[in-house]
Length: 472
Image (tube, rainbow, N blue to C red):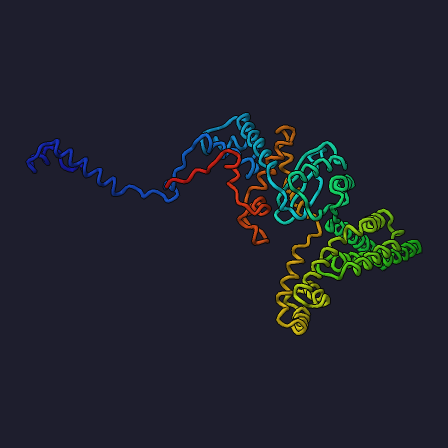
């Protein structure tokens, strides 16, 4: 093999023919090649095989666009580069159009009687309003429809359609939208619509922060002017600047006092009046009226902003505090069920406002333990559940709206947006939660949580299943 000896001499020396020598050389070379062949990289090993069918390709198209929010052309590029099968734009459009028609039909057949509290809101797809409704417990989206108008009649029509499918919530939560509330009064005259605490607190916080910045800016101007007057190299008459400094000091005192008052009033709203753990409804109403009166006294200093907040609070008082009445009923029921006084139950409710690691929490907890004895743990757990199950804002539907905005922008061409929203609503309702702060939601879909019944995978429901098993 090293070519050091001629083949003829090797054949004569070993008394064999030359073809035999050649055959032995080939065998030895193959053995050496096999011995020194590089070991294949672990990343290049075949882990499993997956049969690529037309149904599987449709699953990929639908999952990329709905789960990954991939554009049509990026879907084509991905399938071309990784699978070698570039679909056309028309093919992807047809897949989504067929899936959307089936999704709308499935959604229309879902029973909605399990929804106890609904959250309503309006978002916009460009200039077109989109009416949205979601279940507060399961996050099931039962309304997601684009409309030309958002008046009371439009809302009433959709609410009556939902009522025909079993939707009869104990109450709803929404912002101060006039059309939304007018529509609910027409369709569900006996169903109360509570106010949204989230928007009101954000408006109050914005006002308090704005005036804190105004006060800070006035202080900066006063300090800069004082430094200018303190310059020893000045050689001019400072009477005008001194008069301006006096004005700035007066403005600083006024703006600082107003900013402090607004921040205090906002904190009362957030921590005492509109908080879950707080006093009873009558006390909250008295505190609420006090805050409105204090804002009215300061309204002349900023009629546009303070006046807007004051009028909003004054007009929405009963709606904003409606959750407190629901909570009072729950606390009364807890007191009767555990045979303890309402004062002890309410003290247990107020205990939830304090950090569990603070000395105040431990001291008050010890006092309640002495007063209730062995009933304390059961009462504390019942109050915790009552607080957790008392919604007071529509922030969940606001979160849904933020998730939908990019989708609404990218997919406006399927049947004018109605079919696309129906498909998007279906996917949101039938995909399981990967994680959630509520442990009971993890691994389950909103529809499963709302109805209490399991269902097949969303691709299977859309006629693109079952999912293919992997082949090792």
